[in-house]
Length: 263
Image (cartoon, rainbow, N blue to C red):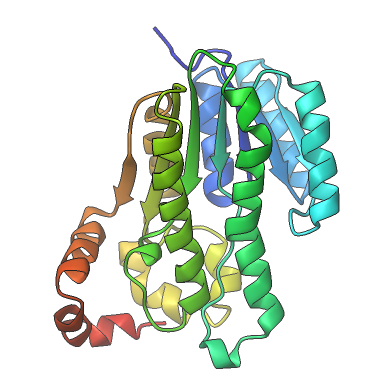
């Protein structure tokens, strides 16, 4: 039995990278994606591809989620047009790898807004719809950076740590409502993310052999939907490092000083 057949899943940051891979995997499994992103051309291309490959409908909404008023309006429209939503995958976000004192503070504010505030607002707004379903699922894309912070990622790591904490608390709040909550805490993924996070390309070159494949990651995420999966932590060696860091932070900072400074 295909538990994803005809399930309606909203995905933010859907036009590229992990988001696009997730959307295509959802469609492959018979789910109906609702896509949110800034690029109308990319979203239309994905919609046409889904129709061509799978003969099914999908929906998209074009908005810059940093524009709070416009995003609120979009979500209001979605609630009217889609009175049934079975899941949310909060994927939209970005990073910028710079020391705090060197970063334009607007970049910091935008990271907090998109990575955290918009994620919480999307969940808050659509939660009443999710709770009406026999079961529903919220997936929040966090990061191993939320467990293991490194130099030049102070704000980014802070937002992802908050996403993990938000997910943990929300899971407990919804335990009797059959709404599952999963945080996806991942290391570097081979996507366009690093074009903005590190325009020099130095960090990408340093860690290229460790990068996760977005399609394999999407398969893992989609395969966990509508199960009580608490967390997805990849790669496993990085999760092991995060656990060691929590147990002995001073020792780990000394041992991994060189690795922490690869950005």
